[in-house]
Amino acid sequence: MKHGRVIYQGRQLAVTESSDGRVQLPDGKVVAETEVQWLPPMEFGTIFALGLNYADHAKEIAFNKAPEEPLVFLKGPNALNGHRGHTRRPADVSYMHFECELGVVIGKRCRNVQKQDAYGVVAGYVTANDYAIRDYLENFYRPNLRVKNRDGATPVGPWFVDAADIADPMNLRLRSWVNGELKQDGNTRDMVHDIPSLIAHLSSFMTLNPGDLILTGTPDGVADSKVGDEIVTEIEGVGRLVNFMGGEELLAQA
Image (cartoon, rainbow, N blue to C red; front, side):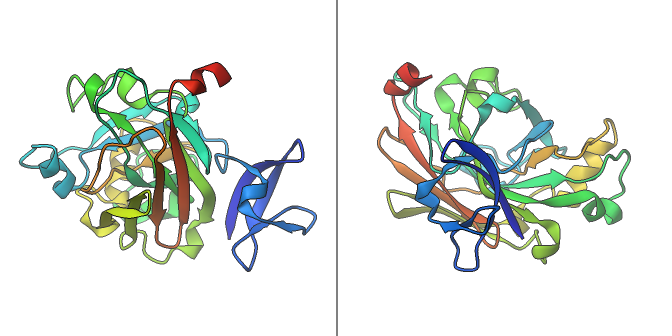
């Protein structure tokens, strides 16, 4: 099942996807996705993000090969944004790119999980768009706060999809469009470190908790996003996430 969170007529509601692909409210009423304000589909705990976890993307940004050990950094909760939300592009940057990523949501408190048991601690999956600002990047191995923790720069959603509904999370097509033009077209099977490996690695030195989110990296095809662009990131079976790139006017609304 697909689960989401929205604001509708001034109330925050937990919703599901209706049989015709629209939004079903708790009372059974069905509305269009444009009739609600979308929130991230759930309250997340620790947010982990993977860098250079697709070999083609590593080459795309001039790395001959991806890191042998997962390159992981943390994100704060204010970085998240909802479906159909607006993300601000700072006026002083020359390159800010989208990143279509599969998000893995932990469902059980766990530590020292073995790879063969990893899927047993997964609650489900989300689509994410983890924007990066290259101008602020000092080192790919240590992306500073301004690169990956800006308010609203990581749209997630619209849905959280139960793990049972995704037969093989390591064989999902990922695609991104900018103003209707296809830019990214990859597959989760091309991850350098797969989902079980990531869970085993993280849980080897820290406890994972229900609601923790692992953003698993992006394939090649990233491109600069300009003010006024519509960016769509879609993962097969998980969801189609729409985001709009805004400019300085968003500061006045904050």
